[in-house]
Length: 104
Image 1 (cartoon, one colour):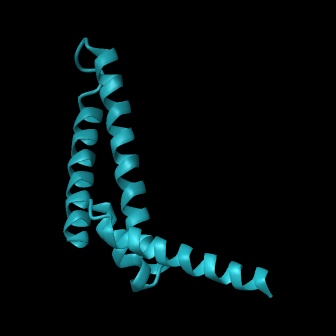
Image 2: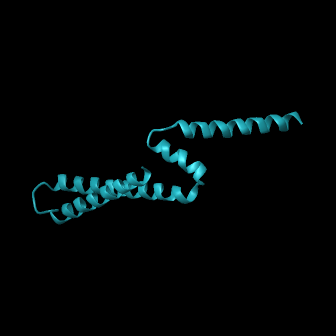
């Protein structure tokens, strides 16, 4: 499902680039210069956000181990249960380790 979402993100990036090129070609040919400028600026923001999200999601594959990456991948799509369990396990392990160190 994660890769499907990335494919949809790539499709959105291509569509945003096509619209940006279309707006650039038609820029200045009509009298609505302010609206065209706003559209170019908006499309540039969409393209930048598409690229940033794609690069962020792509680098997650290389940054985390599969044990950590799979709950994060599920959390991106709204299933927080696995990520919550992983975080609670880490916090519990850290709490126990601190308690043992303090007892000694």
